[in-house]
Structure formats: structure tokens, C-alpha cells
Amino acid sequence: MRALSFRVWLMTLGLISFAGFFANDAGLAADRGIADFPKLSAEKDWPYWRGPSRNGIAAEGQSVPTEFGDNKNVTWKTPLPGRGHSSPTVVGNLIVLETSDEQAKQHSVAAFDRSTGKPLWKTDLSKGGFPAKNHPKNTEATPTVACDGERLFVTFFHAKTVVCTALDFNGKQVWQQVVGPFNPQRYEYGYAPSPTLYRNSVIIASEFDGTSAITALDRATGKPLWKAPRRNSITFSTPVVAHVAGKDQLLISGAEKVASYDPANGKLLWDVAGTTHATCGTMVWTGDIVLASGGYPDKETIAVKADGSAKVLWRNKQKCYEQSMLALDGYVYALDDDGILFCWRATDGREMWVKRLAGPVSSSPVLAGGHIYQANEAGTWYVFKPNPEKFELVAENQLGDEAFPSPAVAGNQLFIRTATRSGGKRQEWLYCFGK
Image (cartoon, rainbow, N blue to C red):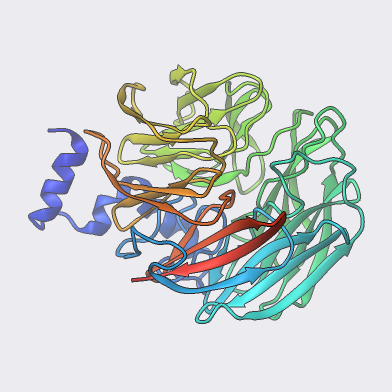
């Protein structure tokens, strides 16, 4: 009997709690991360990219529909202004997303009532300053808003810089700070990383073929706290704070490295060669193993011991480039660019099973209520069980014509940003699903 099955058996006997079931992976990270922000709730909020646990795993006890669609299990749906791939951020009764008007060259943040989906406010943050070119799959509003329970933190690529703005819950600007230069020349593919919160800081990556860095700003004032230089190389991954191997580590892939920094001061803890040139997905972890996948121009998924030894446990030639993976209880679930779903054992990379679905894929997965939810770019949503023994498809749903943003799960509700096309017109929508 494998470890996962054994723990499930213990849980059914009441010998360990459901919370203890996720303690290795989600629980410790969620507890430590959310503890920095006492006004947030892991169960009721989805406050930043990849959720309260920072790894796509929703808080325990969430119950959301496995079957959903335009006329199935819909609590409400509302049209969205503009275009963006920013995933929903949910705090209290507020849902916020970045968006952009590409014709007017306007960056904005839009807020909606969680109970009804009705628009609450829209704050325009900048005018003009859009890059001359962007990747056709990217948008001018791709980063996800981060929230500390008091402020909303928003990043945009504007006028050859990365700019971070803090807003209050009414959409009023608290502060705005230029993080650093951003003016890619070799690959004009836009900007994507979301802001990451840690203690009193908001951490932002700006990596291109120029002066690159990870920068920490004070959450209350926007003043710089530290700056970690990065190799001058275009890459798009969001740095993530994980509590692994007994310490908080700021993990990031890209620029031909998998690296760990001290999130308190930006000091490099360790790095190894991996994932080739560029990555977009956010790193994941299970136990004291961290994993990254990418990239451009070559394919690689890599697992590294995060205890400071920087020991590479395994590599393979599979690639999740734009999307992140999901790691749970010693196993990794990865829907690759071509729509092929893999389950690998984290310790040695053993392929447990493989299933051909359909690609391409950009949206990252979420685990909620014992099911993994992930979409391909065509709006097909796969719901399956995290079972290393075999692939178990629970449902396959079609929603809209596009799925680039990732879902959010909070308070037994599933939030999805999608888009439809009709008569040459594109319209984005925000859905709330519940049982």
C-alpha cells in the first residue's frame, strides 16, 4: 500500500485528521503564510496567486461542484471590462481582477460583489505606456492581485518599467512605486509575474534582457526593502515563498537556474542549473523537495532537494511552460503543454501513470475538496482525483471558448474568469459556481 493510500486509510479510521492529511504540503505553508496577515482567512479567502497555501491547494473542507457550465451550478456570472489573464482574488465580499483596455492603452483594477457579481468599482491606474509588442497569448493585465487583508497590490508593465500600486478596498490609491526597468528587446512577450507577499513586504520579479532583479517593497509605504540581482534574461515566473526543509524559502525558476532566496533579505540560499532559458509556471514543493518545469527553448522538469545541498533528484524531458504543476503528498501532477497529464513520484521521478487529454494549456491547477481542477486553453475543464495509483476522471466541463486565468476556491465557491467569442467579438466573464 502506497503512502497516500495508507494515510487515507488512517484518516477514515479517525487516526489522523483531514487537516493532518495535508500537513506535509499545504497545511504548514498555509498556516505560516496566512499567519502574517491576521485579517485573512484561509477558508474564506483566496488572497493571492495560487491561493492561501501558495501552491494551488485550497483550505480543507471546501466543497465546490465538480460539474459546472453556463447553465449548471451557476451562482452568478458577470461580464468583465477589457482583457486580462489576471486570476480572481477573493477577500471578504470583494473579488478583484486586473484588466486592460488595449485600444485606449489603459491599465485598471475592477472589483465585484462576491454575493451577486455586481460591479463595485473600477480604478484606472495608468494611461499609455503600453509596449509596442506583446506575445499573442499574453495580455497587458496578466499578473494576479495580491491582498494582505488591508491593501490590494497590483503590478503592471508600464512605460518601460514595472510599477506596483497599493489600493485600499474602495479602489483608492495608497501608494505607487516604480519597481525597476523592464524593456525587453530580444523577446517582446510582455510581463506576467504576480506580486508575492511575505511578512511586511511585497516581492516582485522583473526579469528581462536588461538590469533584472527581485525587489521587496514595504507593504505599508512602498519603500524599497531589498533587491536581489538576477541574470539579465527574459523570464516570467512568479517567485513563491514556501516553508521547506525547516525554513522559509523564496523559490523561483528561469534564467537557466532553479534558485532559493531568503525572503527576509533577498540573500541567495542555493541554486542549481535547470529548466533552460525561460519559465512561466510557479514552483511547487512536497516535503523537502521543490520542483520546477519549463521552459524555452528546451523541455525540462526538475526536482531538487531544498535542504541546502542543492541535490538534483531527477530530471525529465517534459514541460509545463506557462502553467504550474500541483504537488501533493509526495507526488506531482502535471498537465503539459500538449495536454498530456502525468503523475510522477517526487522522490525519484518515477512515472506513476500518464493520460492523454487535450492541449494547449496555460491555466494552473487547483485542488479543492479532494479533486484537481484544471483547464486547457479551449475552455475544457478537467476534474480528476489526486490518485497516484491510477487516473480517475470525475468530470469534463466546457466553459466559454478560452481558459487562460487560473481558478480560485474560497468559502465553498469556485470562481473562474473565461472568455467567449461570437461574431468576431470577444467578451470576458467572471463566474461563481456553488452547490
